[in-house]
Image (cartoon, rainbow, N blue to C red; front, side, top):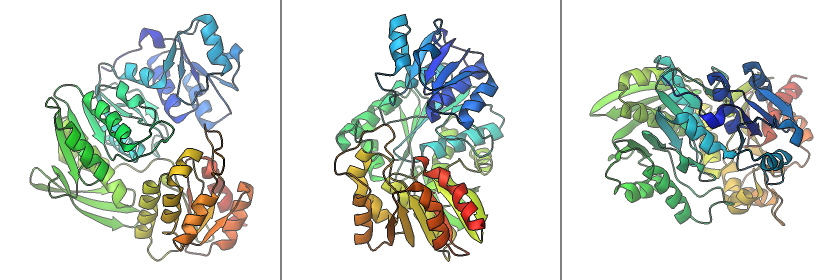
Length: 464
């Protein structure tokens, strides 16, 4: 049986309850019987889903929203110190718990799989959740995106396994003690929290060091940062290291990835035997995610052929190359990619899936700090598209940095030979794209901000 509710989590109040990570924990606690409450900046489908489960969700942040009898206040790193509910918690001497500590408490007593990496965490965690559910293992899971099938980012399961997305951005993944940890890749990102690759490696080393004795680290054999990390953690004699990828030295070797439209056929060599299965999303990047999920499941003792079949039931995550619709012969697809490596992977995947189509991209940069450090590489990635529209930077939790604008990306893209148009008014994008698109084209809305809202609007303009 899965663990119950920790005493501190019996009446939790979540500040920012609608966030991807926060809402998942809140859902699991509600399903386990906790009296969950919280607040968020605006109404959303997530807020409604939480209410349907029995949670109390307030809109806006106010001290009065925090009940005097709350057992704790749960926050993420995005919550600012001057939040009125946080101030009220201090007045009432209510314990404040970071999101990662809350999640760690829910994982206690479970056979935990923690999925880490600069890119691909949500997809890989989702693949595992779907495959394990398909095998009737009733896992609990907490993911940073909504599964296309169940339509949720988290669930309490009665089985022994708990699959969680492990976030490195604020070092919170160091709070977990998994039986199996996956590291998909290691790259410099989250520049507000990491000053160098050495700091990134140290953080991932600490994460790997939290694997329980006798546990397994599943790690990429092809990505340079992961290879470097592998060398650093080989000294952890209590942990088994399993590598996966196209390298001839990989323990789980990717023999071939064959594009099949918007799906891929993957053949791996595992323990000297060939195993072929289908992944219902396009591109080599996502195929490798599936192989990582396969290796992690095998590390828990699940038969590989069963896992391979179950992985074929995965149908995607919202915002990960999600088809939003088709109008006037134009398909509109949504991508969460916001780091140059992710952008390149998704653009190459779409090229492989529809090599004869023109690819039009609407890109919204995410965070001033990321644009400052990686704007040139973002622009170079956009050269893979036939034409791009670039919006202003989505600030999220950050204040502006003087001199850092989307022009940095646009200039780099044009230097790389890309056809790029700057659009400062987001509301003008649907009409702009509708004027550019022709039957047979693919339109990709890309970024981690609210660019996702443009997909339906573009389809409306194409239909009119």
